[in-house]
Image (cartoon, rainbow, N blue to C red; front, top):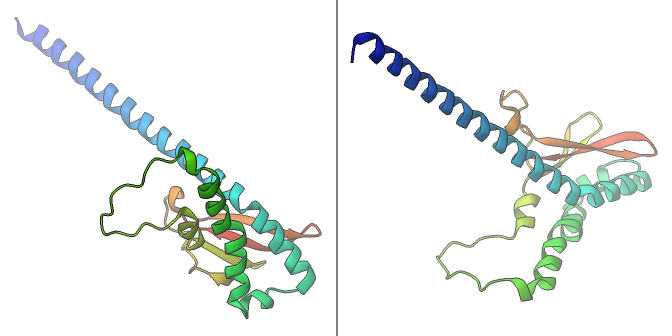
Length: 165
């Protein structure tokens, strides 16, 4: 084999390797992004009844003080709309569930508790009313930004429900 053939084969193999690596990286990025969007939309759908009730409660009370001054209201709403959904699913679906794995010493909480710890209620100026600490929106990675859903009453935005990633 002469030098030109070796250089052409090497160039062809290198080009193929680079193209394959780029294609794999793009497919991985695309899948991750699509899956994250799917999970976020499912979580927001689960929160829609909570958002609706928060709007109704605000319309009755006229401010967020009722929830800010009494954390039991916030926890009650979580129990009603988040934890209760998990319990319904578990009790209605018991026949199709496989036996639990052996105990490993680590306690795993139901999904509702994990979701509960990621929610914050913000007022119309996006100041925290209750919930987890607010996230910095300047992180630069859009996949790690919180999801924010408007809460409206009579067509006016009265607050936001923020879901941390």
